[in-house]
Image (cartoon, rainbow, N blue to C red):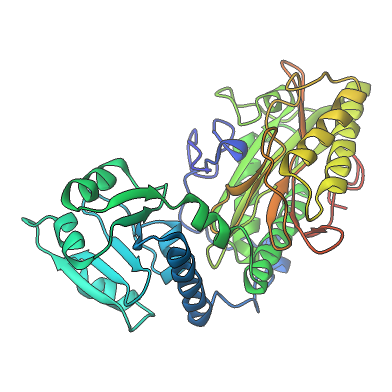
Length: 415
């Protein structure tokens, strides 16, 4: 969610977040907090994705390329590269390019002075390295190493890379959106295990942090506790959006930080990574007495989440769950459409916190077993309150699996 924080990466009160696909900037791991010692080991025992699984992904991609009449798949540094190769690499003005031909050896076009660094990270021995010196064009070297008329390009590729590849080569460049969606939307058992455990650990961390809430603490204070708890559980690249009272009527935060008062609702949206696979969980609960308006909003959101779950079945359209949640919100008196439920119902999750499929009106894509997504309805009343409940769900052959316990009631938000 690449959230812009007010003071540190754990500050989410001033952020852009969950529904926009942005994350809070992460900070270095804090010193262990003894209050969260019981969370240690929660992420242990779930292995990262094995090289053999990534090899199967590459083979499946090559099969799809051949069926579509495409010459190769072009990626630069990012989540798609990590998905196929396990290589994590930062983006800069010097592109690292990866081409997976429809048949034959993959190719890495790498800045020459980084070639040894890349070799340290490679798990695939059958890859051709093409180093480029500072005065050379990596795109010309890429074009010289490839043959074929049609090149599929990851839609997350930066425009200057697309322009360079187009200018240097003779191949037509087409989006690889459908190919990547077909592969990445359906999670393997190993991916499901990572997503499940990351979510369970995040929920346990939220429960633990909530037990240390106190009057007059700031949103920043609680965000720090959540970060500490998630780190204790074994998650990395953690983030937290914390909003009190009327601040939560801004779904992704506001510039005005608030201190906790009795009678406020607390909204916390948080997540982290386990071997690069993401979690994303939101809970809303009261601090002190609950008003009728707060109870109404919370119950409406819970009912909406339940209604959406009934639509999360294989063969049903992504938009059906969104529509069901909106009907429940409207039935509770909180308006039709986007009146108070101001964002889509949910997003897919995997290596990216936000990826296909999206649960939103107009998305007729059919759900399939192995898809994973958030179910996160909300009610936001400007100047008064905000409520959001978010769980990660996996589509199965029957009823959906919710990772970790759902919220049971406004006074039992952790199940």
